[in-house]
Amino acid sequence: MAGTAYIIGVGMTRFEKPETRDWQYWDMAKEAGGAALADAGIGYDAVEQVPVGYCYQASTAGQRAVYELGLTGVPVYNVNNNCATGSTALMMARQFVASGLNDCVLALGFEKMKRGALGAGSDGGDFASSPVARHYGVMAAAHGFEMTPPTAQIFGNAAREHMERHGTTAEQLAMVGAKNHRHSAHNPNAQFQDVYTVEEILAARTVHRPLTKLQCSPTSDGAAAAVVVSERFVREHGLAERAVEIAGQAMTTDTEESFASGSCIDVVGAPMSRAAARKVYEASGLGIEDVDVIELHDCFSINELLTYEALGMCAAGESGKLVADGATTYGGRWVVNPSGGLISKGHPLGATGLAQAAELVWQLRGAAGERQVPGARVGLAHNIGLGGAAVVTLLRK
Image (cartoon, rainbow, N blue to C red):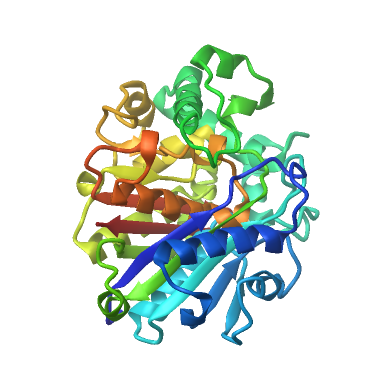
């Protein structure tokens, strides 16, 4: 990429349980997109292109949503990359800007979901036709198939593998949930703001062993957005104080490594995450030791532990100890998921990656209120979609 891209405005709705509010997806998109434009101090007429992420709405829903912001005729791209959809829209925006094609791009993501667990894929269809059938086939060969929610099942089996290999405990898994619920108590945009003890999390209803309900991300409604601009745009509009640099970004998809071992740890994306992180560190010249605050894809508590290892925060098998030692909360080496993460903030698929970016921008500006990580200058976002895509983004102020 020839140039550097910056985020100058972010916005999001509150994430809510589906059917809580009587609104349409275009209403939430208007709220989040309008907030991002207002944060940037620009009008929609400055926007040159709009990648829009969602998984559950019909084709051209992106246009329907964006029309609430303006009817300027600019290109709108509809993006669907499972749970990594929001970060994929953000990556497209960065590519448009860093390539020199555009000076101002709006990345938008939203989701209006149904209550209950996800099906075989984001469309809720059957396994035979699901894009993730191969992934679930690996799981079934190693662990069989039970009548529990499929996504919880594949991640639950990854947790059991980690426990068997490394001695990770159910208590350590529950500590992830306890930490993220505790963090979300200070986030007015979070779907849940209740605090739970490790004991309460362990005692909650089991979804798939060893994962209990309070270690699983919920279905959610919500939207998030980011305005991405060039260095020239920042300079000409006097936006240096608000601008946060996208210092590095990479997306990876599954390779043979995801499937060869027959392990659920690999099939849920650990190799993709490692590869994306490595590419970002190499491109940016920064490493995990430079990072202060992290928003990562804790769709289930085990995935937070797997991601610690993939990002290089600890060696393989040591992630349970890392969370138990308090290294990933306030006062520790990093603050991970100050927003509450997917587990407690919520997980509207198309919006998640952009909500992570919004949280990091607020943190790096020193504008996160009671969630503020003292002195945060570098933030990392990790967003993963089964099937698969992993996006890692490094932001710097």
